Image (tube, rainbow, N blue to C red; front, top):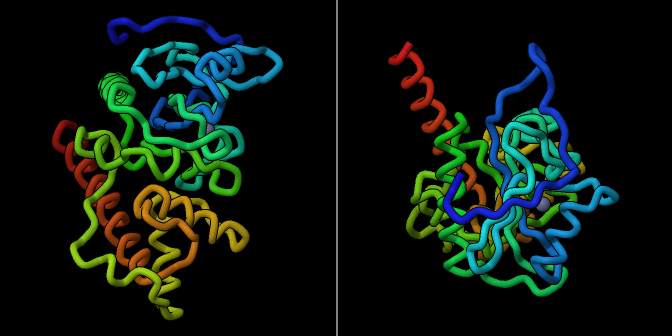
Length: 255
Ligand SMILES: [Zn+2]
């Protein structure tokens, strides 16, 4: 456990399941609190009536709280889906990052907070085998309901620290913004979106695209499939595949 962590155990937790049905911890979900203050968020995450929680909460000054032990199931993902899998609380560790969110005045995540988030994530990744493609935001796994941690969250910084995937955009990409795409490109883009992990139905196509953009092209997240988004999708899909291939290779080497 990182130094200086404070503990306030939430009653909103239970077992991750019993063997042989127990699934391994293999996912990390980042959230923003979306409340007016850290104190209000802490109270809610520990209120038995609210039935919500997370494993950790990180305040804007970097102060860190542990609410649920990693070995237990916290209630943060809700109805969600990633890479075709649901009931993600069973396999996920959830971090709540204090920010008022889009409802109460969304703002930048301060440096002290990001340092703490980075350190916390690093520790979690050292304790559990979590593939890079399974470090996600809440909006990635519940795009029809959620927008957190949102377009101001510094995913590139975490990726540079080895936490999750965020390939740098190809140069010249921005010139393609707003340009329409044909039917073939559209189909390829949706296949890429699913390959990255987004769960799709005809009803959720635009919200999933907006979630992808929020994370990987945060300058504009209108949910419209333009040429820039297509190229970015292919880029991220290739990064996911490369990470998966590298994992597979490491597994066979050390067998
Ligand atoms: Zn959330």
